[in-house]
Image (cartoon, rainbow, N blue to C red; front, side):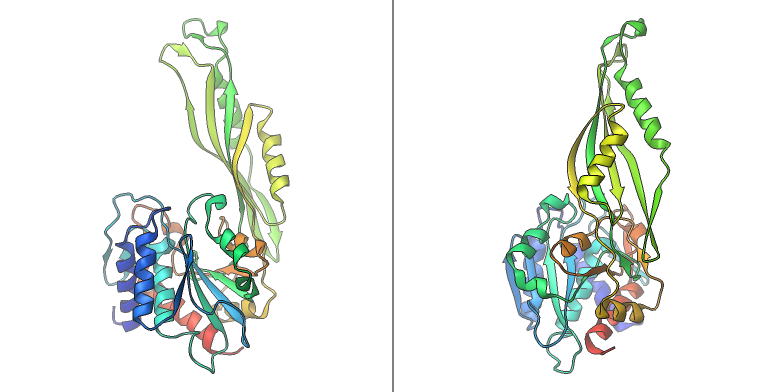
Length: 361
């Protein structure tokens, strides 16, 4: 790790990994970040409900960019505490998104986007909670509603794992329980019963036969998909079951409203069983025509990609803020038991955002 910057951000990432912060338990890491920033002379405000901001809180004479990072992780899989080697930092949240938080903290401590009168952009470093839960439980949307000055941002850069590519937009997401009913009976005389698991099987077969549907926006292709992620049913080994369930996850592209998405999911599922939609999150539009998004794309100098997942880009859009995804973590590493982030990727992300703050287009 010859690069001093990479070494510093790598060490900071490991420090954050070793502070457990599963969703709804972000208090310790929030307090740690406040202490770090205040100790480095950076003003930071506790906005309540697990949300913090350092740097700018509203637009002044320069363009205003929010860097967004969530404090929470998915549950641990025996991957905390973390470790570090010459190439990567390993451990829970390394990719999604303790590495991004480390980049944000180091940028703020270095004064990037904060104190230089010659800078091109003012940064607001926005940390928030509960992103890994359904969007209805995120702290970000309520924060943006109660703090309208944040809505003055010219761009939000959501530092989700993108392997340092610009990923535009995001998929919407519906989660649902699919229930199948039959009539119980003895497994020796199945013709006298109605097997709910067989009905479930017919439904799953129909889902498995669906091909991804491609939708193009500004040359970016998003794929609409429906997946069965859990199944349940059965009473005993010699009983035909009367009930069975499956959990569905439906991902839909920009351009489809929540109402249309839910109607589409019902049309697919209701011929086979009863569906209860339990959570829905809107998609995020592709917003690449602003000057700051164009400048960031120029700095990254790589093809823009679609975000084939849900991210808080949709929440920023709901508040009227153009947003893109850009972060050092690799999407393939997120939520994996062997999650990691490359130290070179951390320094690249830092330097790119430093240039965005300091160099006019």
